[in-house]
Length: 371
Image 1: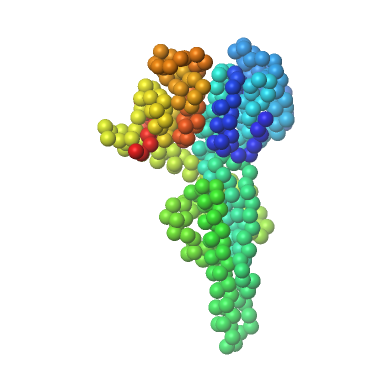
Image 2 (image 1 turned 45 degrees about the vertical axis):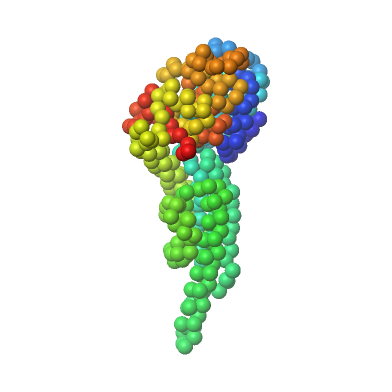
């Protein structure tokens, strides 16, 4: 079983490549201790629903053990079981998905992907005149990689006795601050590149932040959104407030990215553009390995299905559309089939809420690769 604090694309590809009939569960753990009995009753209700869909006892037992090991109040449990074991599980803090359980030939990843896109990669830097504390969050991570950067200069005080030498002490201290900020800026450039982040949360000493901004690499200044948050490196009681701000800014950055993608999709809707929409055109692009970004709505009421086979590009809305032997092809919900093909062919997946302005026709579309 994979239980992680980072749901990266490679983990999802491994899950989608595994054979078996999958049980997919999303369960809200945000319950008060006195509501523990209610949580157990809700869980049992999900299990009964899965049993009605043909789930085996081994898969249900594995999921139940994972549920019992979860910490109440930690978020939404996402778990995927097949062949008597939980293949992947994660707790998604701040997820708004209500309780959901499905059984089918593919894992139902849309709620997980929607949560992940609202938690893009980002770096938090808390700076002072000696260096910085960094927290690196890959996309979809719930725990950070922590780093400490210490500047090369330790002469940071300028409150020396007065007299003729006062100005010299002051210049020497400010030179030290700037040298230390340059070191932090270099480390930040590397950290942002390491997790492919385009969002930087910056907290700490005002003067240190000014020097840091001055020395940030050009790529960072041009491509990264820098967002101020409160607090400093020393214990100041601002930690909890800063975490709330970081969560809000991260979610806002993710939703801004989603809105920008929808706008770009709309701009590409032309005979010479790179947008495709509708079931047939989108599945055709996936079957040709030409889709770069899949846009799909998470509509629980949708009854659309499609067919998929062993290969990543074996996909169609009709089984008779395959020109080769169709033995081994399976029917599954359209969105799950499209997500599988997209992730296994290197395309990004973006999940849209039904009714979002500018969504593709029939709730599915995307942007093709540039030739």
